[in-house]
Amino acid sequence: MDRDGRIVSFAYRTNKKYFPAPGWVEQDPMDIWQNVRSTLKEATENCKIDLREIASAGITNQRETLVVWDRLTGRPLYNAIVWQDKRTSSRIRAIDEDFVDIIMKSTGLRPDAYFSASKIQWLLENVEGLRSRMLNGEAAFGTVDSWIIWNLTSRRDTATLEKGKFVTDHSNASRTMLYDISRLRWNPDLLDLFGGIAESSLPEVISSGSMDGYGYISDNAATMFGGYEIPITSDLGDQQSALFGQGCFEPGDVKATYGTGTFVLANAGTEIPKSSRSLLRTIFYSLSDDEMNYALEGSILASGSALRWLQNGLRLFRSEREIEEAATRLKSNEGVYFVPAFSGLGSPYWDQDARGLFIGLTERATSDHIARSVLESEVYMTTDVIRAMEEETGKRITKIRCDGGGSKSDFLMQFQADISGAEVNVPEITETTVLGTAYLSGFVSGLWESRQEIRELWRLGKIYRPTISSEERELKYMGWKEAVRRSMAWRP
Image (tube, rainbow, N blue to C red; front, side, top):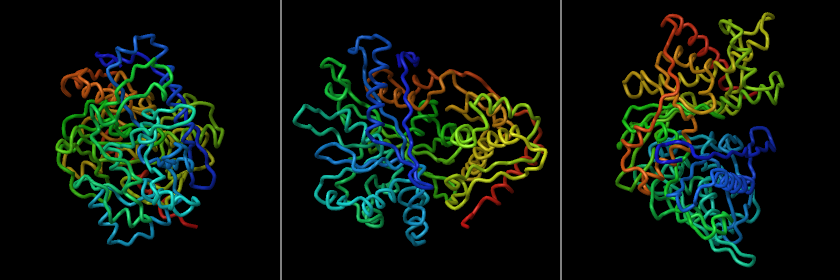
C-alpha cells in the first residue's frame, strides 16, 4: 500500500483445507507458512520497488484457528484446527451453566467450539506426549498470527534456530475464549477449565499497533531482502482489521464482510459493550493497555462456503458468476429457503446442533431456485445480526459498509439493502482485511499521522438503497425465520 491508500502490489494463494472426519476442518501449518513466504516474495518482486522504501509490515489472519508447534525445532505438532471445526461440540455442551456465565462475562464470547480454547484441550488429550511437552516448555499454542510472526522473525541456518517472537495482539487473544477482555490477561480459571493449559505455552499479548513488540522480518525467514529487515508494526484479527480498513472509527459504525463466513462488526468505542447472549463482545484494536477499543460482533459460520459447496460438492455450477446468473433468472425465491447450518448456527442463534436445510421445494423448483436461496441466505443471516445489534444498542442502523468476495455481487448487495432496509456502501478497494492492518501498521510507523487521515482515504465504489416496501420485506423475512426454526436442534 502507498501513502494514498492504493494497492501497489498484490499476491494471493489458497490454503488447502482437509476434512478428516465429519465436522472436522484442518490445514497444514507449513502450507500456510510457505504461502506467506511465496506471496511476500511475489508482492515485493512484482512492484520492483526499493525495499528500503517499505516503512513497515502488518499481519492479519484467521482468528480462532489454532496451531501448536515445537518451540525447539519450530515444527508443527499437529495440523492447524480451523475455526469452522466442530470436533469439540460435545465438550462445549458439557460446560456447567455457572461457567457459561463466567466465560461470557470474562471473554465476551458465548461458549462454542468455534473458538480456540476447546481446540487446545482436544490437542492435549489426543496428541501423544503433548502435555509433557507443554509442561516442559517445549510446546507453543497460538492463533495463525502467532505462528506467522514466530516464523517471520525466526533466524535459521543449517544447524541452529534462533527463536522468533512468540506474541499475539489483543484482538486475536480476545477470540480464544481464554482471555479476560477487561483485566487484559489470560484467565487462570479458564485455563484450568479447558484441560489445565499452561499460561507459559500461550503467547505474550501486546498492543495491536506496536513499534517494537513484533520484531522484524528476518532476512533468513524471507530470503529476499538482502539484509534489510522490515519492522512488523501491527497485528489484527481479520474481521477487526476489516473494520479498521473500512474507516469505522466512530462508535456505531458498522461493516459486514462476506467471505467463507459473514462477519458483522460495530464499533463500540472505548467501553466494553453490555453483556449479550446473542452477539459477541470483542476487542477491536489497541494502541496500548490504556487505549483499548471494543466492538460488538455477529459471526455467521457459513456463507461463501455454501457457494463453494454448490460448485464442488453438488457440482450444480462451475463458478460464482453462474450461481448469480441462475439466481437473477427468477423474480423471487418462490418460497424456497436455504439455511447453511453446515457447522451449526452462529449469531444470533448459537445452536451447534442446527444443520443445513432446504425448505419450500416443489416440483416447480429448479437449480435456479437452489442458487437464489443460497445467495439469499447470506443476506438473511446478516440481517439477523443487524436486527440483533439494533435491539442491543437501541439505535437504528441506516448504513452498512460491505466488503469481501460477496460485495462484488450486485444481486447480493441490492438484496442486502432491500432486506435490511439500510443503505449499503461498497468501497472502491474491497480487500479491507489486508487494508486495515496496513493502515494500522502505517499509522504506527508514521506513514499516516491520524485516524482521520486514514478515514479520508476511504473511497466509495458503489451504493445500494432499499427498493421494496416494508410489508414485502417483513413477509420475506418471516419465511426465513420459520426456515431457521425448523433447522435447529437437529440431533438424529
